[in-house]
Image 1: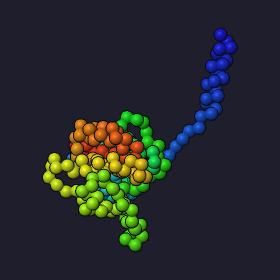
Image 2 (image 1 turned 90 degrees about the vertical axis):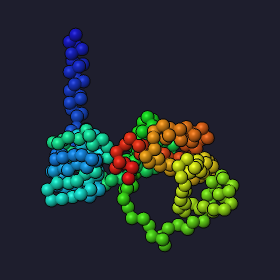
Image 3 (image 1 turned 180 degrees about the vertical axis):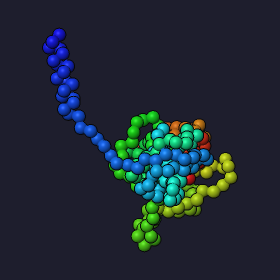
Image 4 (image 1 turned 120 degrees about the vertical axis):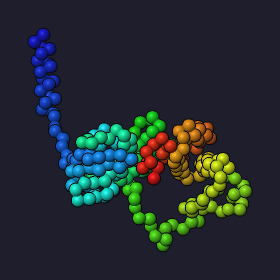
Length: 236
């Protein structure tokens, strides 16, 4: 029994000796009021515009309106769970999303957080949400065609990589079908596709994912989802 006690004591002492406290400096404030997707926070004296802040319940917000006495925060989650007096702290990171090859084949929300139940996304770096687009001179030439796989479109409407193309039409006329056919047709063509579903029902998004997986298109596709039941701020 004495040997067992000595062993336990030695293990505890080893853990105590190897412990290294970690600390960080960050602004901490309190919620003054919250409602309709906006929260007013006091105490974040050094927060920057467009910086991500985190509420005590884990909801993320973006510091948007910087005033002398308080900060207006756009809530990127369920604002109904945010109450007066709740703690808020800065993250030191300007509003950004993870980028990298780890996103291929995944379903993420507007903040880049995975929602497909397959664990965290292996992130290599972040890129800011709000950034200045490169000028016309600095942009790469549009010289590589994109084949949609629909003969009528490919014959009459040439589309190039880097080109913007609007698909317009009434409801239930096949706009999404054209986009999905185009994504499926890029299999094996070294082209990454990003499908953004804003304001759609989750059932519709699930059917879209099933179609992409059926034809093996998720191997080159990233799906960004801001469903109809999510806060309006994520759909913007």
